[in-house]
Length: 238
Image (cartoon, rainbow, N blue to C red; front, top):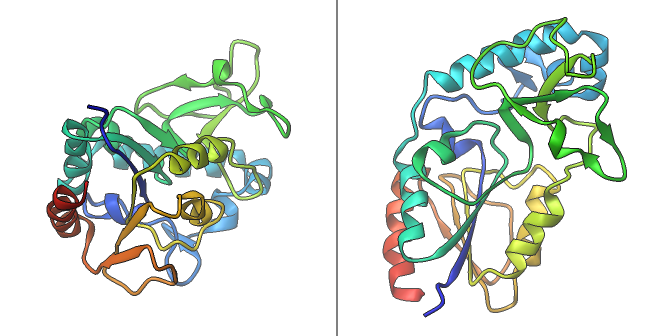
């Protein structure tokens, strides 16, 4: 029998319970830096050394953390369902928890690419993306073609190449789960609109959510506890 398909959209709230701080707090700072300085293409060209140092610190942070119960619960869904994880997170905690089909919308902290390999039509060339694990990147670290390496991160001011692939997966879903995201960062926040009219949608969030859709069921809880409740619900539904 063909497994029912679940698409899980995750955001910073999933990794927060592992100790990774959320992308942006209420005063527009990320780790005490203005977001535009460390998470925009303009910031990169303005001060490459600052941006590299910032992401080197983020990479070390990821290396020191472990997947939490929410990551593990999401991975466990694969035993009974066809699961695709679409994540806004740049960490690798879903991979380390055991999820096997993951679409990273905003890039991956453990990977780099040459600063010049991006173009508007095709996005970045996958062949230029390299996995560096948890080591630092510094000014003077060059690609095979002699170009400065940059973090493989989608910054403000850059398109999101994987958004179409993610939308295609949502269109095929029998159930969509949204967990750990405020649904305020686009284009990811609009992915649920690609779900079919009969697709059930669950949101796990301890706060009120801004979405108004009759298909949506809000599980008002943090990611770890909310996943426990979701699994009990979905066993009866799918």
